[in-house]
Image 1 (cartoon, one colour):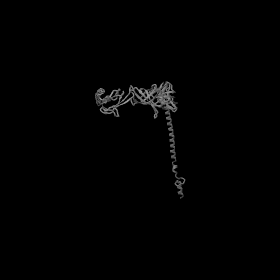
Image 2 (cartoon, one colour):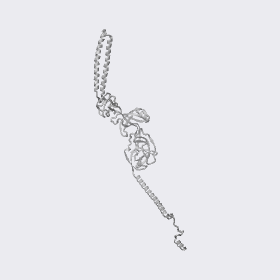
Image 3 (tube, rainbow, N blue to C red):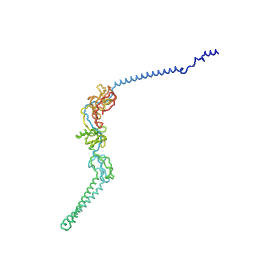
Length: 438
């Protein structure tokens, strides 16, 4: 037995000093390898990220350098010294100076319409005819009654003359003479009534021939020939509108009332423009001002009259009525599109002789439509950028090109009143929101 034990101890099968190792201890080398790989991966990722970032920054710097060397195309305008008219403007509606709905004044069948739709007619021109035969017959009857009653009156007058001699001789009593005299007076009244009936019949015959009461233009026909019309019909036969002269009713803010009242005595010129303020339609004169202010809108109404020789104004047409209130002499003008607004005020981009854009603070005076005056910051002859400002910053090289937006000719204002002056300084940033000063 001791030998067997010694053999077993020699082979290590039952030796207490050689027990199996735990699983965690057997896997520890593999875990270490995994951790090492993860750390290596993180380090490699950081290295690659920093390398790509440095490459992107280098590319951006190169692009910025290239961009700084390239010129940016912009549209420019020249600051000019001109007189700037100051206008008052209000949205208005054209109204015919006179509008007449022609109606029948007698009953009957409409047998003819003697004018075309859209035709120009003169006052007194024949428009339509209602069957006049019934009224001709009535006229003849009235004339016949007058002839009959005239003969009766003449006979009564002869009897009255005879009775006058007989009553003097005492042949007939005074009462009989007085009765004959009353008969003569009665027949005289009948004659007057017959004459009135004749005049009424003639008037109806005249009414059967409808004529134009004004000079104007015929609208669309409301009743066709052949229909029976009545004097009590709600609708008329024809509508005539007077286009020469023609009126424009427009409104202005109540703050403008006193300046307008001061100028109206000398005659206030008024121009009518299209709704987009691009085309002048006609020149006229202020006729009158309404006698009250609309408290709901804070405006008052004005009426201007236009000769409208070219038929450019049409009833119920919307127009912009413009009145020149004053003129600002020798103002420095630039397009309002050049004005930029920053956090600290208004500024413009000025193109220098070195063809670079420079930020220039400005003090905006009065804005009238697409043009504004500059009180300070710009000199006559300088170039200001009117389009392409979103690509500019201080010192950017530009390719200046004149364009349509560079016009400094005073244009109609786009608002209902003259613009208020603005006094501000430029912002510090290079890219600012674009907009005109109001």
